[in-house]
Length: 285
Image (cartoon, rainbow, N blue to C red; front, top):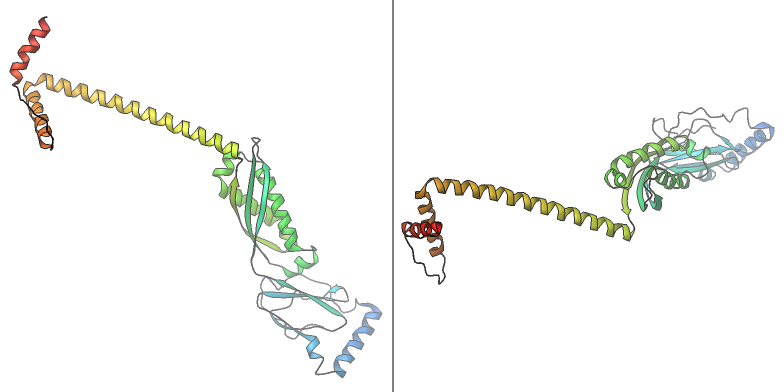
């Protein structure tokens, strides 16, 4: 018997799948039980309504079986629906998005490095009928498949790819899981790699390698700075050699800088001409 309270909205809970109708397929014993159930409902009316009328929430759907056969029309709900006691049994299916943590998986990467990786998966049931009839436990099966898929995907990646391409790995896992869970009526919405834990020895080796690389770059930068400074000093010396007045001005600027500081330095300025005389004697010797 179809429910008079069944919603006609088209959504993830109203499965557009042709199911086996209960009419003409329940057999002779089924018809007898059907007639007896209707008589019992009529005799105990209105108290029988407490057993016949059921309610499911907006985010739930009810998959009804009549004498072991799936009732036509797909999942019922949301709202009120009608069942026949002693003949019908139903299962509620939650359509809300569910998230779970994939336990840390010990993975051997393609470059023979052992890492522990965990992830989080978001999924929801989009076809209530298929999630009941095609798989024993859709939630548990999805969790187990997520752990297996995580190991399979990471086993084809190098350590550098796992550390730098998390987004691509997440998209690849999401597409693989979604394709595998589609016959179960489950939609995998999102997969995120949470953490990649490396062995302690490997962490120390990578830290030593990074420190050596930084020291090498620091030495190269210091050498380049010394080279540029020497070139600048050579150009300044050439300019001062060409103009003796520039050397005198530089000499006065140096004296001004020293005298500006609050110290006990005593300065005896000497003319450059006098110093050039001594410099000329030293050159002749």
